[in-house]
Image (cartoon, rainbow, N blue to C red; front, top):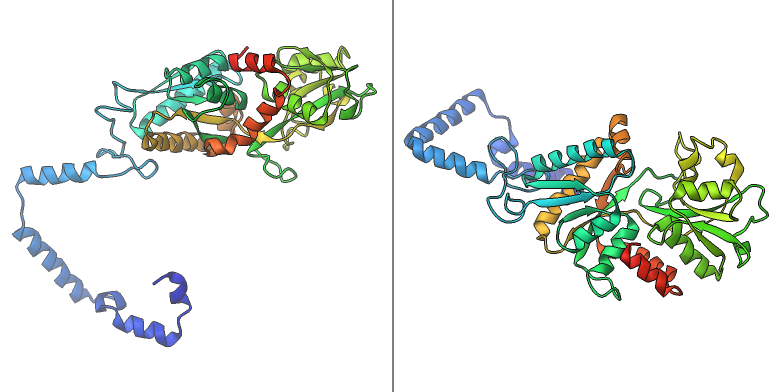
Length: 389
């Protein structure tokens, strides 16, 4: 009988049910009753006294069936999940993680070392992590089976999905298991789970609308593997039928400076919702220290479509129970760290995330659709994208 049906019962019905309960459940025990029960327990224990060896076997058996609340893994008497003696997560088959730092490499290394140690304690698995210098290397290792877990950007995730087959259709050898969460804004529903790009111009420019970016105009973009810096705006321009001249540069600071110096008509940067301490929260921040008036000297004339935040991926060869354990532990680590200002500062070095939510490849279909749209008229660019160049 559910709680709802009990709550809706009449007073008479509830009294009848109370009368039907055994006496120990329907009324307080008297002191004499407690003594009688304790005596019965003691007498049963004495009659069933076990040998020390048998007691030890029972204790060990009970210990090995204890489950960690978070992961569901078997734990030892100390409450720590047991390291497998063989198979995934054992010394012979460690779980290998790959990262690319988003900020200061030294701080990122300390944060990632802390994550790996946390994951070892919470999963019992043997885990080995490495920081690589770019996402092309991470994609290569996860695709070739040299790593089991990777923290990817949206664009590098898409490349990994294509790279495992013949570059014509994405496959499911690489599985998204988590999606990043960032501080959202109530004025932008879903902005905690998705991001978009922005197109900026100089305030002195006569370009004030997207539809003015015709063939006579120049637009600074990042390399073809950049999501907000290239893929998203290209898809937007294709959708609007715009064909400006593209000026390829490396990184958001160079894009922003090109706009500031009026060497291009527009530039493409990432955009995030405003926060209390960052009322303007986009790629222009990358030059704020050297150009403190950048927000006064530039303006946003349009935005790209939203796409899901970047994923944590795992190889499909890793059994589902192992993937689930690892995903839960990673999410717990980041959420715990994000609960303090100091922890949030640490997380800046690995992407400014404040948490993760469960995800799968289907959640990233909008991203895959945008990529197809971005390269529909550019087979050479698509080949460069797939190659990671």
